[in-house]
Length: 130
Image (cartoon, rainbow, N blue to C red; front, side, top):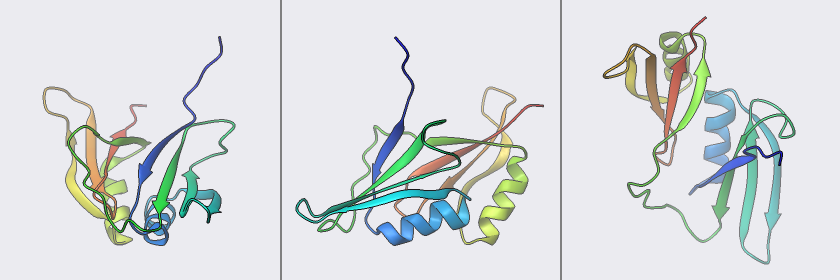
């Protein structure tokens, strides 16, 4: 059996604002977007590469829902970066919100940082070890 993760879906209150964050602040590409008028929702897929090659994010916008209670079950989306401090600086310069500066993780040595998207979802930046 050949399986792989295709995407993670998150619900967003303002689709254009979220697409701008993921593309302009985090540098992803908008891969596809589809309106479903009968269901009153839009799906947008963003990622760093083609969906056939890797996992992406599905941004779901229900037209009649301006915001969501994120709850406490969801943790974060993780992105590998070559330099977590430089990534935080670049994200901040593009208007992104850094909520944990780059530094070693608690109880470990991996350098991580956290940023937050416009809906409050956490994005972990994990510095790659060369």
